Each structure stands twice: as structure tokens, then as C-alpha cells.
Length: 393
Ligand SMILES: *Cc1c(COP(=O)(O)O)cnc(C)c1O
View 1 (cartoon, rainbow, N blue to C red):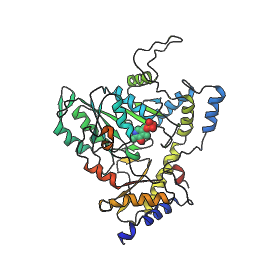
View 2 (cartoon, rainbow, N blue to C red; view 1 turned 30 degrees about the vertical axis):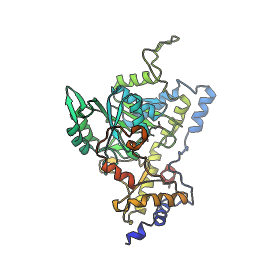
View 3 (cartoon, rainbow, N blue to C red; view 1 turned 135 degrees about the horizontal axis):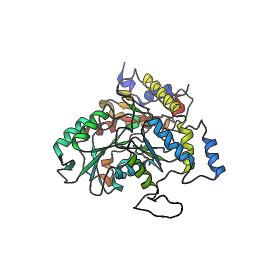
View 4 (tube, rainbow, N blue to C red; view 1 turned 90 degrees about the vertical axis):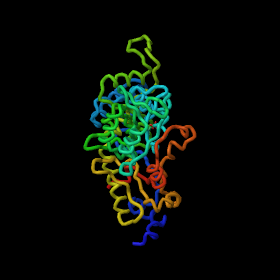
């Protein structure tokens, strides 16, 4: 096959279209699907007037999230960024600490670290997961870290390094076992940013159940949406209680008195949003099935192409394929932008990945390790339309 013909942007777009096979679009990157009891549950909130703070949908949503993910406790909050903020606080991240996190993630991951007064420290990715590279992290920590009395210090900055945030990129699970081992050796807490990974499994266990604390997001573009929302997951009952306490202004329960025992946050998820979430969660199996079916269509459409392929899950993983990724071979990285241009002209709203966070003005001066793998990935990733409805039938 002639690679030059194969990497013609028009040809790439025709392959995407052949997998979609649904008229002319436009095809947004990720649209929500409301095919269940959304109307019924939201109407119930309006009919009863219970739209805000406490309500049965919040309780139900938290229970169903815990059941679905196999984690003991879920605490619903107002968005995924707030969930991350609570996770970091409860992991003990404080002013002046460093937190290791991937350079390739949504800005929220670093912002939440910054909200704690801590410093993001960017780490490289793995070509097999697109997330944290445990081997490279371990080598790096051998170089720069001093582990003493259960604490980890950065010998270059003399700041305590408290935690690693692993993000499951576009729904693909990070290789968690070796990462947990690195965390154990270096006395670091593991937090999972599972915002994109509801419905993804690592060795048959749902992601978000490996870290001490994990966060989910239910933003409008995520696999399940509450309009805006998030959740903290943890197997630790005390941390779950604290997560609830901190996210509800740290008010002590009392029939009428307002007593707050620390600075808390107004991060609770309103009942009306949770109602939407309950209806959405009832359809998660369908969403995941459709998204995996869509990924398979893309995989097949690109199986004959050279220089570009659908990024697929590892043997240890079952991915929700939240956002499908076309990955260019290194010699074709210059084709990323021409493909994006042609796709968007054709109503296929393909996107590049996030700009690496170490390149953003507010995080430019933060510490980072060698980022050569993720820098290459950034130049070669194209996200393509991934709405659940596109995998139907
Ligand atoms: C969506 C997302 C979040 C949280 O986003 P919110 O919009 O605050 O819910 C955090 N991290 C990643 C990687 C995300 O994709």
C-alpha cells in the first residue's frame, strides 16, 4: 500500500466517515445521550421542590456510584475539579508541597494542586497507556527524591513530595500495579483522576478503586453527565465522612444551629443534578457498550492504513473509550494539523490533545522531568468524535 496516499488528510477523513456511516454530521467530539428516565427524575425534583442541598437523588446517586465502581464510598460534589481539590486535601497535600502529575491532562488536575497552595511537578507518559509512566517515574525519583522517615523530599527543591495523581487518559487505564509499587517505595499517596474513566477497568477492577482517593467528573462531555458534577471515591470510611464534611461547608449536623468546625467548601452536588445523574447511571452499561462498539469500528476502518492507527487498550485494561484517539507514527507527526483542518471542514469536530500543562503561562516555571515521550505523543494525537450514539446498532 502507498503510505503517501494513505496519509492524505482527505483519505483519513474518509476512513473516519466510513466508521461513522451516519449521514453528513456535523459530528461533535462528545455529545450527551438522554435516553432514560432523565425527564421523570428531574420533573420529580421540580414537582417536590427538592432541587437543592439534600435530597434522595444525591443519596441514591452516591450509592449507585459506589455500587457500580466497587468502591465503598462515593461523595457527590459540584464538579470534577472540586472532587480533585477534596482528594488532595484529604491526602494531606498542603501549602509548599509538591504533587506529581502528568503533563498531558486537563488543566483541572494542576489547578486543584495549586488551590492547595502546592506545586505541580510534571511527569512523563507511557506510549502504552498515554498516562503516567511508572518505570520512568521510578528512575526519576531515584535521582531526585530523598525518602526518609516515611516522607519523600525533592532534593532539588527541598519541598516535600506528597502524592502522585494518575489520570486515566481518554478512559485508558494507567498501568496501576507498578505505579502502586513506586508509590509504596517512595511513600507517596496515589490519587486517581478518573474523570474520564467511569466504566474502565484495570485487571477486572474498576479504576478509581486503587488510589487512596479518586475523583470522577460528570461534566457535559463526560461519559455520564449531571450537567456539571463530580465525585470523590474512597474505600476509607473516615475519609468519606471528611469528604462529605469538607464539601458541605464543614457544618456540624444539628437541627438548627450553624456551627462550622473548620474552613469548608460549598461543593455539594444539587439534588436536581443528582437526579440527572441517577437516570444517566442507569444507562452506563449501554453507553460503554456503544462506545466500545464505536472504537471497534474505528479500529477496523484504520486497520489497513499505514502511519496512523486507533489507540487501543492494553491486555490489562478494559477501556470505556471515552474519547477515541488516532495516533500518528512519529514520521507522520506533521500530518496532525492538516488532518484536524480537513476533518473540521468536513463537519468532523476532531481535536488535538490539551497543550501540555508545563507550557501554560501559570505552570511554566513548575518542576518537570524529561517529557520527551509525552511531547511526542502531543504532536501525534488526534481525538475523533466519540459520542455513545455513534456506536449504536
Ligand atoms: C473533566 C476533567 C476533570 C474535571 O472537570 P470538571 O469540568 O471540573 O468536572 C478533571 N480532570 C480531567 C482529566 C478531566 O478530563
